[in-house]
Structure formats: structure tokens, C-alpha cells
Image (cartoon, rainbow, N blue to C red; front, side):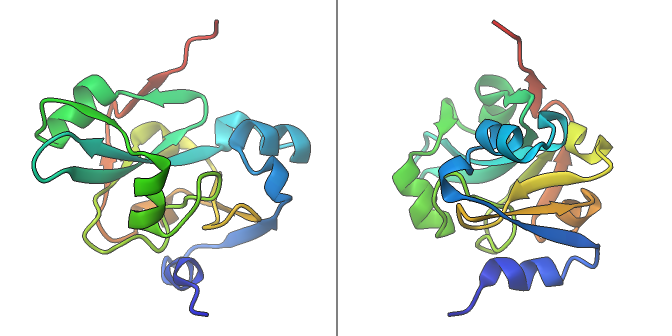
Length: 162
């Protein structure tokens, strides 16, 4: 079986590490707690959708310590009156990946990839590996070199502790 994620990763030209993980602890907070990584260096890839006709999608990469500004930044960038997170079913259909393993690598070539500028401030960042049993640890410049990648200032806001 062809692995689109690994093919895309090989083309970015930066050092990376594949981290094998237990699928039961693949969700970001569980992974970091279990394997001793910091949430400050962990990024989530989240598919968003603009409620237009036809629907417009984009993949957002944000640090785990932040939250996507869906109501302002995403909605405006998608030129839509409303925007939200894509459903798990739409995420699987569009990316071929399940939640807990979604990665910016190996995405469809026409899907916009928006990376919050805070991600680029990290020395290294952990992202999903395309499945729930692996993560990718690399310099964020590797994300910025992906097709359709764009660094977006203010894509995410600091998550307020409750």
C-alpha cells in the first residue's frame, strides 16, 4: 500500500523523527502525558469547513495550547458567512485519515493548508502521523514547505484555562 504521508514527508527536506505510539493514547493531551512531550511543542491538524455552496474546506495547524479562531479568521478566509470544524466523517473522506492521526502531510493537492504563526516559533513540533499509531516530530519549516501551505497570523488564540 502506498503511504502518501511518508512520501510527502520525504519531500520536505528537513530532519524528522517518526514516533510510534499506542493508538489508545494518540489524542494530543494523552500522548503528551504518556510519552513526556510538552503541549507547547504539539500541534493539531484540524479540518474546517465554510458553510457555503459548495462547501469550502481548509486544514489548519495550530498549537495544542491554542484554539482556532473559527468565527473570525477562518470564516473570512473561507469567504463564508459561517464556518465550523468539519465532521469526523468529512475529515476521513477528504484526508483519508482518522481523528487522532490527522497530519498536514499527504493531503489532497487542492486543500489549503493554514499554519498558525505560533507553530513556526517552535524549535521542533509534533504533528499527527497519518494514523493513530504514529506521530511526526520535526522542525516547523518542514510544514511551511508543504504544497498549499500558508503561514497565517492570528489563526489561533491562546486557550484560556478554566
